View 1 (cartoon, rainbow, N blue to C red):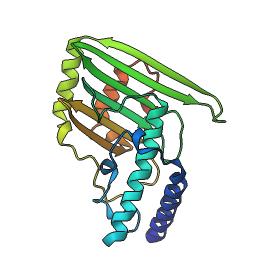
View 2 (tube, rainbow, N blue to C red):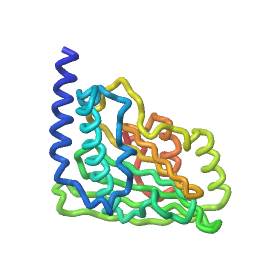
View 3 (cartoon, rainbow, N blue to C red):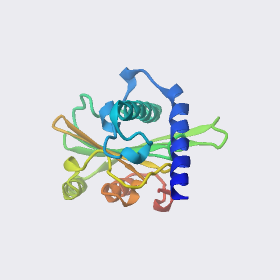
Length: 221
């Protein structure tokens, strides 16, 4: 019975990826490099476990996910942190389960010449997907809060956390939590499915509390 459920989930996953192919965007608009989504450590995720088929399947999946997440960040009018970004900056991005374009948000904290600010953006889309509300809010913080945040970054050893999580569980449905950082022109990103209880969960929720976004912790998964 377990094997049957796994196969059903794999089929759903493959159909989901196929449906997303139409969402490819111009490579100049991508917010990430495909390598950040190239999952070669979880061979059970789509049923292709060896050889060229495995690599090609993962490359297609990486491009699709990159295009999908980049379109969402483009809609939020966010900068591309992995490129030339002049300030030390970190960004928490949250998306609902893969394939659904509802209510994404980002929270970006940066130190701009000793001026610390948190920029939060949120798109609330109606169920009919024809109407949406865009929120763009900035909060200025004191240096003490910036020091506290950096201490949390060090405590979780952010720069050494693997970008992709190794897991024995096949997750077909869940939210995406992305924590990016750029410091001294060094960039790193961590992607987690259902990241609330993962390594980056607490620091992402801390950023949420620093912002003016009215999103309850229990509404995040």
